[in-house]
Structure formats: structure tokens, C-alpha cells
Amino acid sequence: MPTHSKALAPAAVPASDSNPSHGATKKTQRGVERGRKYRWGRRISLLLVLAVVPALAADPDTSVPKSQTSEQEGYLHHVFAGPGPFLKSAAGAGISQAKGTPHEWGGGMKGYARRLGSGFGKHIVKSSIRYGVGRLRHEELHYRPSGREGFTPRLKYALVSTVITRKTTTGNRTVAVGEISSVIGSGLISRLWQPASVHTVASGFGSAGISFGADAAYNVVREFWPEIRHPRRSKNKKQDEASNTGAALQTEVHGNEQAR
Image 1: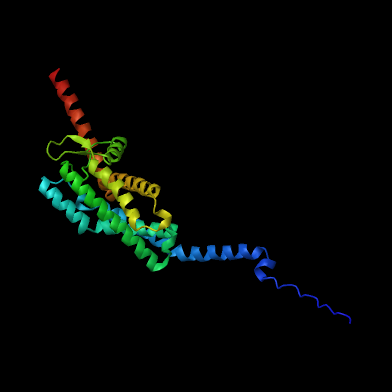
Image 2 (image 1 turned 180 degrees about the vertical axis):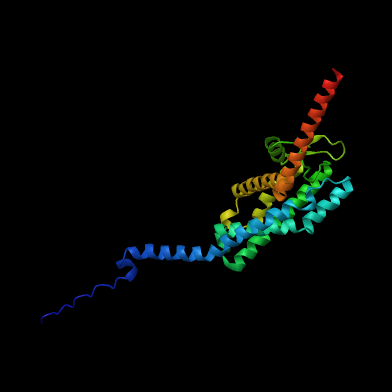
């Protein structure tokens, strides 16, 4: 009896396998969607940075306190009640949102809220460490303007002031142990609530490095803020000083001629 064999139909090939470029297209679409997801974060981060710089530079934190007690009270007010910490946290959250880091937190308002909470929590840890260590070591907690003349000396002073401060008891210069320990400590401690991609010691030290750079830039802004805020007044002041110097020299020369 003849046997009839049935031809096996070829297995259906998924559309994604039949088209090698389909995977690349899906990746491109995901990239476009992610770009749209974080586009608003890039815009808001720029606006926040532009708003933060004048608000922080004009903060009363720049004034030199009259006593250690007033300094401590002013520092605590600046940390917990002033607008500066929230604005800095908001700007940092906007920048992280624009970069899409950490990626586990996603985008949108939910992702931004997580980054904002993380930034403010890190600020509280940093400020608490700095206040405790600085008080034990009698370190000044506020930035003291240099009072120097010339761009280079003032810039150098502002940068060095990130790691050098003064004793409240003697006024002598000393290493800012409170600042250094708070930056490193907050960078590492903040890893505890970070997702897996940044839950590492290396990421903690990287965060500390960014904080050092931000604090140094903050000191530079505070040092030059009077000139930035009132450039015309600063120019007139220099012209008046030059005129007074010239008048004094002319008076001295005239006096010398009369003495002869």
C-alpha cells in the first residue's frame, strides 16, 4: 500500500527575526522616547541654575558673624530655614534629571521628586557633619570675603577657602576638617538610598568630588558677587579710588615744590 508523506510546512519566522534592522529601529525609538522623557529636565535644570546663583550669592551666609553663638545660629538657620539649600537641591535634581542618572528612577515628576529628595537628604547629612565637626574644632562655618584687590589673589583665596578656614577662638588659619569630612561622609552615606547603578563606594567618592567642585564654585561666586551684582558701582568705586590716589600724588608733589 503506497505511503503518502506530507511535507512539513516551514516554521513561521517572527517579523523581528526576518528583518535584522528591526532591533536597531526599536533601540532608536527607545532612545527618542527617553530623550523626550528627559527634555523638560534639561530646560528646568538651566532655569534652576540661573535662579540659584543670585539667590545663593546674596544669601546672608556671606556676612562675618560677630560671635561664635551668632555664627552657629546663622548657620543652622541657613541650613534648615534658608532658601539656599532647597534651591541647590532643586538645581542638582534638575541636572541629574537632564542626564538621566540614576536611570532606575526614570523621568517625569516622580523621577524628579526622587532626585530632589535624595539631594536634600544629602544636604542635611553634609550640613550635620560639618556643623558637628566644625563646632568641636572651633572652625568658622561661614565664608569670609578676602578684602583683597585684584582678580587672581581673590580667586586663589576663594578656591583655597574650600579646604582652609579659621579658628573662632584665635582667628588662625586651619584645615577645614568639617568641610572635608562632611563632603566625603555625605557622598558615601547618600549611597545607602541610591539604586544599584550608583550604590558603590566609587560612586560615593565621585559624588564627593562633585560637591567639592560645587563648593569651590560657590565660594568664587560669593567672593565676586558685589562686582557681579553692581558692576557699574564697582567701576565707579575704582575710578574714585584712582582719582583720590592721583589727587594725593599731586598734593604731595605740590607740597614738595613749595618746600623747595
